[in-house]
Image (tube, rainbow, N blue to C red; front, side, top):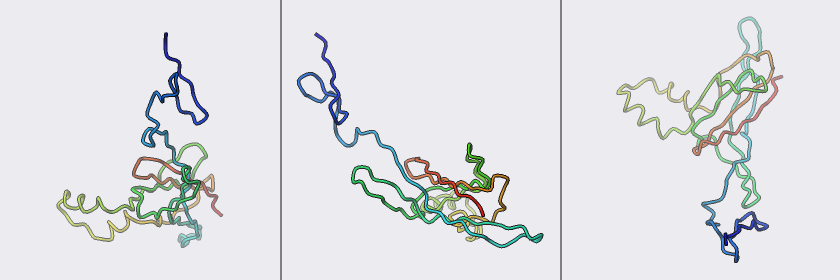
Length: 160
């Protein structure tokens, strides 16, 4: 006789007789991140012809911990990467600027290059404030933050 699997109220598959057929440990749970980058969009300087420019500052990442039913905030300095799409079309996030705030790897890269570019270059690449940018056709931006596990969380904001 073949063993039957039964799914209990918690979604745990059990073999006949009530024994779990696979590990019910926390490490075997399916996990997904839910959250949003915490950003601020503000006007920057104007171009020489008077057109408005914008800057976006990434302040952190707010995620929802479903195990504890709490929102947790993480500083952006602890995120490996964030990207800005200066004219988000609602379909594709096309990164027009990419920054890498988690700076632990920069020392290794500096040694590997064997050169020491100006420190301002490294500071810029590790920044939390974008370069000034003009608004595009769609008049909205998207900011995507990637964490150390490769989870991508994105927020879209209108300009103006």
